Image (cartoon, rainbow, N blue to C red; front, side, top):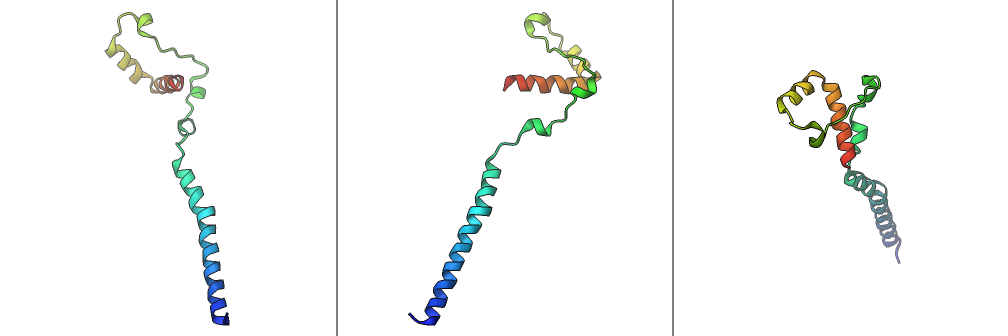
Amino acid sequence: MSQAALLLLVRWLFALVAVVAIVAFVVRPLLRLLRQKPDVDLMTPDYGSMLDGEELEIPTEKEAGDFDRNAAIEAARADPRATALAVQRWLKQRK
């Protein structure tokens, strides 16, 4: 085997190792990261500390009797933090 052919073989081998390393250490972790679902709990603010221990309960239809939709909307608009906390807890319970 001539020196030029050996040099060409070494270059191709080095290029192959570089491509395999890039795929193994860059592309695969990026694809794995992109496939993960985001953690919603980390993205939502914690309004619980702002309410100073106030406990919220969401009434069910059995407890509420006749449900007044307009009164519920007005109550939600009156205290958006409490509403956000109630919705956040409700969503966590549904998981």
